[in-house]
Image (cartoon, rainbow, N blue to C red; front, side, top):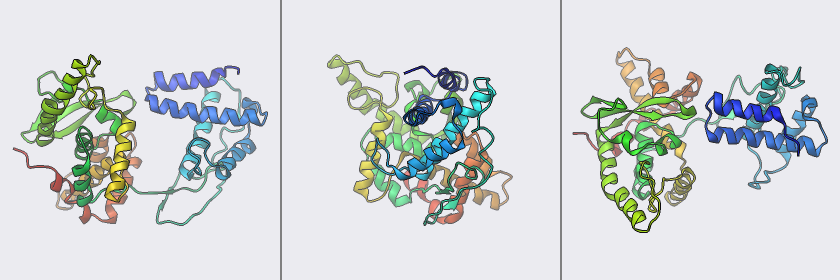
Length: 351
């Protein structure tokens, strides 16, 4: 029950100075808690842990299911936890909390592989190391036009509109749910500007507390205006009548008048997906936007337009690394034609 000060300092720096989100901070904290708990059970001092200890920790996750879910750990989760531990020790040495560590500088000594069946693409670079398992990277799976239409038809307010914002703008679910009522109201406050009669660019709060911009179509903003004047107003009025505190600043509120929650939205997506007969996640909506946009830009570039489709999509998705966006390019290469009609089949014509 002693405080491990370097771990606290590590979390503090990533949350305050590097401006990671609360979810990222919780993930780092969970990784460190699980790692330190494993060390304590084996009576290993944390600053004396070496490669043998980390490999044993990794192998335990391969053989023992998760205590929280009861399911086996995925290769991705195992590698993510191992990287988190390595990141902490590297940080501790660089910032003088440890003079040295056997876990620093060892991740590229040699490769331990683990193969399994499936039509996945093998990830390169980051999966090569003494501690990391060979990981086969699954490509983004966008919805077909029919799937997207069925999903939108089954979702109830406000979650149908949240999904439309993801599908038409490519925003992360956390970014959509952070939208305020002022973000979508047309006024000259410097937070947005008209790109054309059919589109408006608005400023949004992105991952890591950064500011970015997103293109919202006029028809999407019209749908949002209808939601504001009908569902949202009715729910806030009902909350007021019942003397409950409503979330008047949030754009998306539930039928109790409080801000819509990410976990509730994702749970509803999974439930509706089961009813539809296909898997649904919030990231698939973002992936559908990315793949569709990239396919269209690739077509323009092939016809001679002086554009770099990958760079444009990287900017629209607010990615820090081009490698992240490149995954969508590989997904588009699988079947370009199946992506070209998705937004056309869902998005009404603008004025």
